[in-house]
Image (cartoon, rainbow, N blue to C red; front, side, top):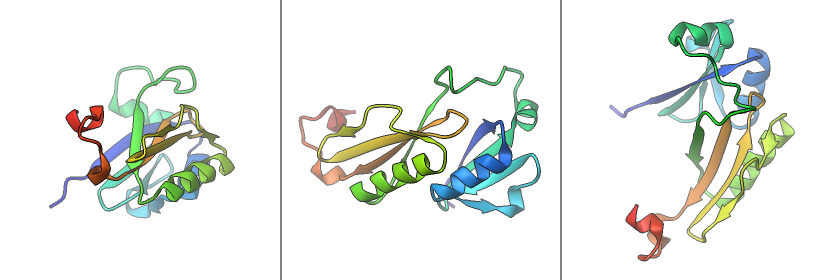
Amino acid sequence: MSRLIFVNLPVADLPRAIAFYEAVGAVRNPQYSNETAACMVFSETIHVMILTHARFADFTRKPIADAHATTEVLLCTTVDSRETVDAVVGWAGAAGGVSDPTPSQDHGFMYMRSFEDPDGHIWEVAWMDPAAVPADSEMATA
């Protein structure tokens, strides 16, 4: 069985967050969704649980970070082409997010841009061609 990842993110407005994540390509799984949480599926192995602040607080004693004011995490997902990187970032901006809150990167073999969701969570979108990584690249030795 493939390992799954469930990224859990607190959101201020669940319906707005559902609409946003659907706009950038996720599909809501109703089996794991209710009035306090929604499971947004990006692939067979990547799921994002968006939870109201009250529901998120059930899982931690720490305060919920204001992702508009602090960086809590940088999330990155890959796509199949440079054009898809641009499309996803465009969809995010059109759906109420912020396009390119961090500098874009173009290393030839890797192209990355980013978006910020309405709650301030930063997502990087990357296309990579591992076969094209130069042998002397920092990426090749990482």
